Length: 304
Ligand SMILES: CCCC/C=C/CC(=O)SCCNC(=O)CCNC(=O)[C@H](O)C(C)(C)COP(=O)(O)OP(=O)(O)OC[C@H]1O[C@@H](n2cnc3c(N)ncnc32)[C@H](O)[C@@H]1OP(=O)(O)O
Image (cartoon, rainbow, N blue to C red):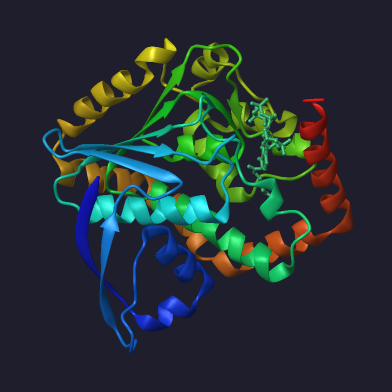
């Protein structure tokens, strides 16, 4: 699918690693000479995020494609944010279904290899990208529906929680939840806030402390997902839900969404740098690095 758009990119942004990664991901080329430049984005289907627009319906399907488990690498996070931004700037699109291109996995959450054995500058860059992904999704003016077609632990669950509605496949092997404590780490306050806003305080307290991963029927009971359907109906159901939400006038729905969500997002926006510092010092601790490495080892040994 080829789609051409002209986007203004300040050349100083191209010097930042985040911007370089984004530009590489989207195939943007800076003409010789630099300066503030206009560049053409000619590929909408980037490597880790596939976007299938349906302009007639006013919707798009965004599929994560980072095999084997759609872990949220820096590259995937970057592409996700840029793809979302492009859809938000596209006047023909009002709603998006977020789903996975990897069989049986929605997303395995944050990429543990981005949080293990790296230096503090890398941790800071990675965490900024995680924050950015959450803020963009949580505050998006588009209607977002998650079509959860596989396992969705931790960061995968977080992505689903940012959406306006969640449809999950009925396979009992697929689980969803914020399981950070099982890894010996702590979900940050904004993960917690997003969960509390979705399932309430008491259920969140229990789910977070125990690191609960809910199979679909339990996720439905606790309110973590809104609908459970057979696997082959997840995407079509998500598209039907999208159509229902899009029947509401955009301005009224968007202002209401913003009224409901802005105070939660503002809590992070007011302390983004401090949150990055907290993450870097927490994740750099020897004990935390050991826990994460042991967890990764366990995942690898599971196979053998
Ligand atoms: C202050 C810190 C706050 C930060 C908060 C963190 C939030 C997070 O998101 S942390 C990540 C939490 N994620 C998980 O706990 C999920 C771990 N993965 C799994 O449970 C399973 O992999 C899953 C159920 C998703 C899929 O199972 P399988 O289909 O059986 O696949 P494998 O387990 O064999 O995995 C294949 C391959 O992928 C590697 N892997 C899995 N998850 C991750 C990950 N999150 N990051 C990086 N890599 C991951 C796994 O090790 C295997 O690797 P190889 O052995 O090299 O093939």
